[in-house]
Length: 375
Image (cartoon, rainbow, N blue to C red; front, side, top):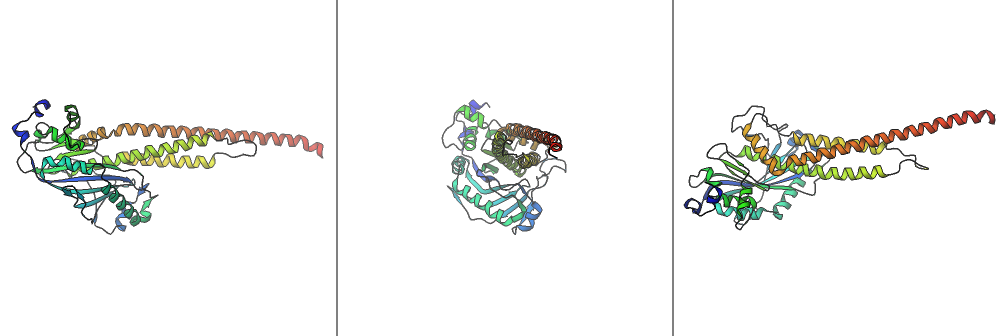
């Protein structure tokens, strides 16, 4: 069935779908520290913790794991109302590269057509945003020195995953991108009204299935999973959302570093009464360059997906929606620019040193000529 036919009223499309079991996950990713010592954090956190691994639902090699595995913390939480729904549990995931992802679980049951309203409630929800930031602040206070250079970035990367395990009536996954295409697009775009055909096509374009009874839709701000065992797919999406947050943070931090570097180069560092070299600035620049490069490498290689074809496809699809390759190219270019600035600064410092040595030699020669006459 084509999408044009899917948008026409049909007996299948007019039938109201009922969700028998499902969960909506509202994710909030924060840049909380330069690095987290997960072993020390595990000892410090009093709540029950466990190392998160990707569940081997589909055939995959044994080495398909996070490196190192993030620390997952279930925390007690009061229910937060979201229209007809409410949160039931809160989970924090700590990554060694300094990011923390806060996840709110919202049980789903009832009409499938009610999900666009929930998506609208979650869009920029100030209550969840404030609560998640408070939880990260409390976490950092608990971690102490297990968090290296703790600080919370002013921005957050949020994402919503609708995970439906089963409907009240048997449903083939194909009908979600044919008969229910318009409804799925409204959920992904958090749109209460009717969408255009072009918008629907774009919203549901990034999808994939492993079998006839599952499908994953990936969009820029939300994902819809129809899968009885979607935990592994959700874990990959959560990691990609955290990587996007780190890329944004790195990009902004590199902008600040480059601006400071340009200002440093613009300063006059040699002249009458100002015999100052670049030693301190070079050390600072080298440290910032190394910090950014290490963080970039940790974020880019947090999860090894070689050998797991389905989840590799999921990650590639999420990466395209999040434009991670574009962020990667931008950050790599700025790191190269920072390296160029460091090289030019080091060259200038070497030139200044040579000039100083030349003046010292000239002064010594002049002194050797004048001293005999003075004697």
